[in-house]
Each structure stands twice: as structure tokens, then as C-alpha cells.
Amino acid sequence: MADELQNWLDRYLTAWSSNEPDDIRALFVEDGTYAGGPFDPHPWIGRDAIVDGWIAHKDEPGEWTFSGEPIAYSDGVGVIEGHTEYKDGNVYANLWVVHLADDGRATSFVEWYMEPGPVREGQA
Image: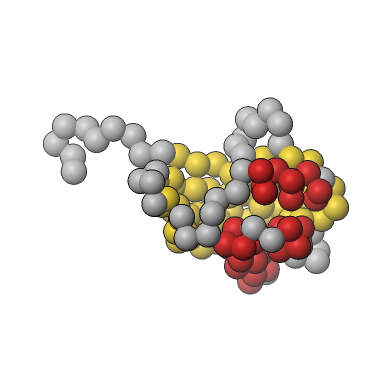
């Protein structure tokens, strides 16, 4: 079953790289949701809204790198741990919580991300 989550992640990375509406649309069920954080007051609800929101906030191909992998999967809920670096110097640690339907598309996606904090004295 963890293979389903890895497959979804692979397709997500393809969509992130292409920004093609069909690639994005293929990731989500018709009434899927996409939240940019656990307290996102305006998640994208529905596949068309997800595509529109994604395109409106897209990252250009080649402007970012992502490394990560699924770290947990049970009963259709998966967690992906990742690390995203942008060419402009922004760096994020990511946890993505993905609920998958039986067909491997997401019913829900919530991104949790952290920016690096200040380095404490004596740390490098």
C-alpha cells in the first residue's frame, strides 16, 4: 500500500514540474481538497479549484528541487517528508498529509512546512 503513496508522490512531482492542468487534475478526486497549511482559511475545494489555484501560484520548472519520501501509510492516509529548496535561497522542511481514494487519487492534501529558524550560538 505504501507503493500507492509513492506513486502519488511521483505523479505530484511530475505535475509540479510541468504545471500542466491534466497532470494536476489527475492527482485529485472531483471533490478533493488542497490546503496550504493546517489552518489554511481558504483551501482549494474541488479539482477545478485545485488546478486554478495551483496555476495561479505555480513554481516555475527548474526553480526548485525537492527530495523526500513517504514515511507512513495506513488506511488510506499517508505522510510524506520532504525538503524543498528554491533557487532564490528559500528552504523548507515539508510534511504532507495525503488521504487517498481507492483509485490512488487524493481526496485531501494538507501541506505542513517549516522555514529554517535562527541558528543558536554554538550551533552551525
